[in-house]
Every structure is written in structure tokens, then in C-alpha cells.
Image 1: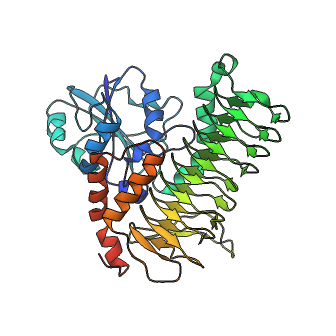
Image 2: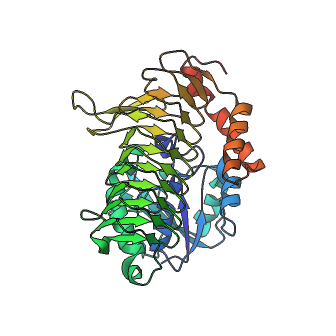
Image 3: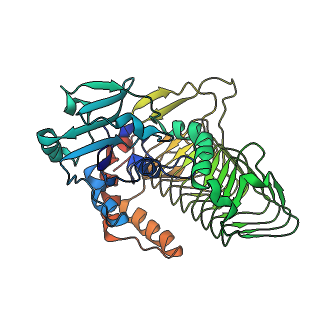
Length: 421
């Protein structure tokens, strides 16, 4: 097995927009951990490097000190696609020492390269990798799970929670320090519940792990009369508000505040849905705020298959339940409503009555049913800086440059919607 593993982005990353404007695909969450963390756990003895689109490289170096980004120092490397959901004996498929491309049907899973071919590949490490770069290498079919669209993460989240819990907790559950559970809390299937150090669970709360495990992270606050049904994960430092209904297959956190009704949903860190309202079969980015009584539909009235717009392409998901995809730093006002399969880009602000369009471009500002205008980049950065400061986090110069780059990258989608620059 190679001593060096590079987790890479391929040229299908765009199918995961807007969730991957601010991050590589492998930083997306599914279950308790990110795709990157799952891959790293499969190769515990390897030196891991990261590959990403060029405009994300400096940000990734900032957030991953000590890790090489878009650099491969060794003479041999196993490149693993960041869209892989790695689990079990995933690494066993790649033990050959020969240069070979590993495929799962038409998906590019991994490639082992060495020598002069690796030397040439280093020149292309500021752009997504394409299978065409490895023409001439033999191909080998392997069994693997890869995500292609945002709803794949939601669809796999329940299994991801189960697998991560078994792997990360295992025997540790008997020795780990436990948070404070007040009298009057109901724990159903205690063996399937972890309440980490510093967490508090207040009276009247029900933690139901009879159909799947529940992991309550460090310093989480679960307010009175909340209900959490597993499998579910509440990330470090998050709040579950009083009376909240958190149903199965839900991942929250870290540092989120969540209330109302949530099911089959992934919420990235530092996002808030504090009040009443339903959120289902959705993927919500980081630094998002959903106003009180924000609701989304995840099922069409005719129970038909949901179609979703990704960029300029209309995709038939083949699924009956698909909710909302919302990119980082976007916000909805009170009483906002989102239709089945709605996609909201990054740094958008939505308010007013009725349903907004099912596709809202990044950096949009406007009321549902009215013409949207462009949310200027300077205003977007100013808002992000103020919101992050509330969590004692500074918006760095690197992140400001990243904002401006993404604003430029999304200009075409606003133009297609007839919005001014």
C-alpha cells in the first residue's frame, strides 16, 4: 500500500454546487464525520495530502496547518476521489503496487501513479483531475460508494451515522466521560446513546435510540422537552432548543442552534434554525440562518419524482423525498417557504411572502414573488464578518479573497436569471 494518499477533487465537483463553492467536496458531511475524515481513517499509516481547485488552495492551507495542499512529495501516490464514502475494508481494494485506475461503473474512484506519470501529474494539481489524464493505464473495477449530488449525502446519512457511531465510539462508550443528564430525562436504549463531556440534557427530554444511535457532542445543550430520535448526531457546542423534534437520519453541528422539526437533514457548522418550522430531506451549508417559521417541502403533492436544478441543468433525482439545498452564508426571513427540491446559492437573502424560485442564484437579494437583485460583494463580506464575530471568529484576508472569487465565479448564474451584476 502506498505511503502517500492524496484525497482529490475530480471534474464532477460542479454537481455538488452550491455546497462546494467554499469547500472541497471531501469536506462535506455525511453521518458524524466528513468524507475526508472517513477516507483518512481507512489509511491510518499513510501520509495524507489534499488536492482541491486552485482558488481553494490557500484557504485549505489556512484551515489545515501542517498538511500539504496540491503537493505530492513522494515518488508513488494513491489518489482517492473525495466523493467517496469510505467505510469498512475500503483500503483493501488498492493494495496493488502497479499503476492502475480504479473504477466503479463510470465513476473514477482512485488511481495509483508513480514515476514520470506522477511527475507530469504534479503540473495539473491546481485543477480538478479528469479520468482522461490517465489514458493508457489499465482499469480495475472496485466496489465503492460515491456521491454525485447533494441529495446523495442526505440519502446515505442514516447509514453514515450508524457506521461512524460504531467505528468512533465502539468500546470507548464504557470509558468516556459523560455529560450531565438531569432527572426526568428518558433514555431509550442507553447502550446506543453517547452524551459527551460537558453536555447537558435537561428534564423532559426524550432520547430514543431504539432504531439507531444518538451521539451528543461535547458541550452541547439540550433544552427541556426536546425529542431526538436516532440515528442522529448533535455536534460539539450546539444547542437543541426547548420542544425541538429531531427525527432520524439528522446530523447537526458543530456550533449550531436548532429548534422546530427536523428530519433526514444535514446542517453544517455555525448555522441556525432556532425556531418553529419544518426542515426535511435537506442539506444546509455553514453560517446559514433560517428565520422563525421557515418551512420547506420535501414531497410533491402528486408524490412524484423530484427534479432539481443544478447550475443550468435540470436533474431527475429519481427520489420521492428531496428537500432544500442551501449554500453557505445564506439566510431566510421569518415565515419563509421553500418548495420541493429548491436550491439556494451562497450568500443569498430571501424574504417576503410566497415561494421563491426553485433555483436562487448565489449572492441574490429579494422577496419571494418579486424580482431578485444582486447582493453586492462588499455588503456580503461585511455581513459575514459581523456574523462570524458574534462567534468570536475573525473573517481572514484569505477568506475575503475567497468571497470575491466566488462572487466572480457565480456571475453567469445571476446573468442567466436576468439579474444585474
